[in-house]
Image 1: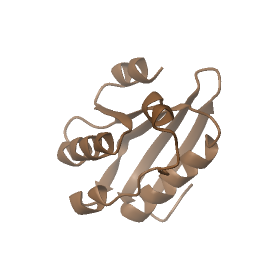
Image 2: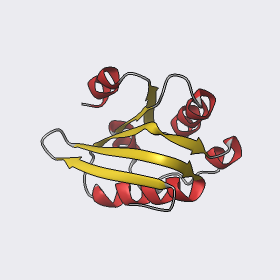
Image 3: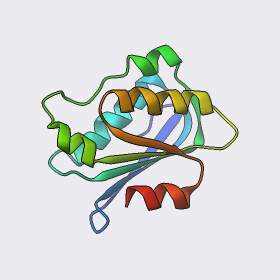
Image 4: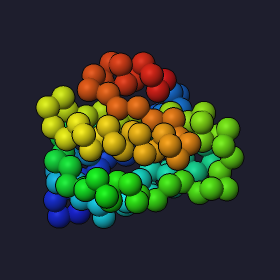
Length: 127
């Protein structure tokens, strides 16, 4: 998926039951929504874990937009939501408050998500 300023590469690793999403460029709310929608469609019938790599992008989504970000369908069974792990791999020096807020907001919505700055730890947690 590519917009003018943002590119997302989706890699489905069936052997690891993992979807890796590598994001580059300037990420805004519309791009984020499209990326998440595409990722969800790739694993709609599967409970694959997800790894979003945001280390090569600049995050232009406000705290208010993150709070209002669409949650997964309420019809999804809560046990399935809790089983699926989502790791956000972020740069150490930028936008940590946005990512930390996103982690908290999504966890409050019942999803199992964590923010990491180390790829090794992120992969170890999701796989």
